[in-house]
Length: 320
Image (cartoon, rainbow, N blue to C red; front, side):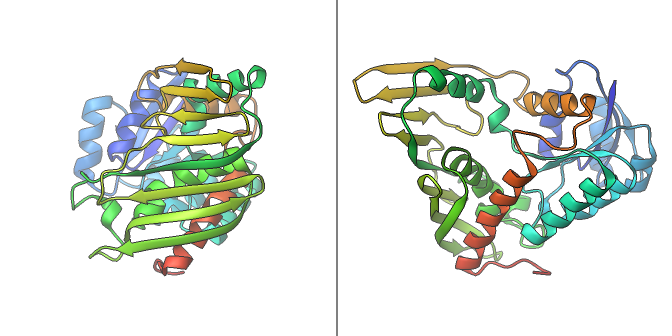
């Protein structure tokens, strides 16, 4: 039985519990949030023990912590969890920037504990099935990725609009696009970015072109336009469309140069986070300290891309 504690009781924590319930051999034990009313409401809905402090949560009978807060506090909670001997699954982006992420990874390595950034797409059944299908019916070497999302219906009070909480389109949405580009094209070599700011000091829309080891990507992220949310992956003999929302993938179309079209449908269950949770729990049971899918190096490369994108539009957060 792997016993869990949750730090932060916002919307993503609700989805986490939905996924956790679908994983045998797991139990939700303790919860804490910066807002007392939030954690009390959460416990009433899902069970578990409402803790008064983070220290109380970390001292409880748990094996792992899911950090569901905003990026401004990820590092401090990671360090506290490692010091308490707990494994950590941390929401993305795992840190504000690469130097801070490196300190988190070093702390996990020193304590010999499992750390993984919560980047969900590669764990979905559709993503697995797509990669497996391409082994026997490939589209040739991939050289171009186009992806993005702009979500225009987020309420103005949402934390994504908060400069102090490390909001903005690049941090909130661009991290997904960074994953997709790196996963299919390899390490980033160059980044070219344009973006515009909103009244709260965060980027409301950003578009970035990237050069990778194996090709190019064109990516966008935004909060004030209604974007499509699909992804295009192009190879020499075919291309793939992962239909919206590509980061919760359910359907893909492969179009080949010879005229063939292959449709892949693979619905997900339990909200979708259950797949990364199951992977994380398996790593714990195997005594691993790093995921081979969202590796520490993948996390480094993702945040490094965002660092370069923010630098080019002039977005710095407090303490940078």
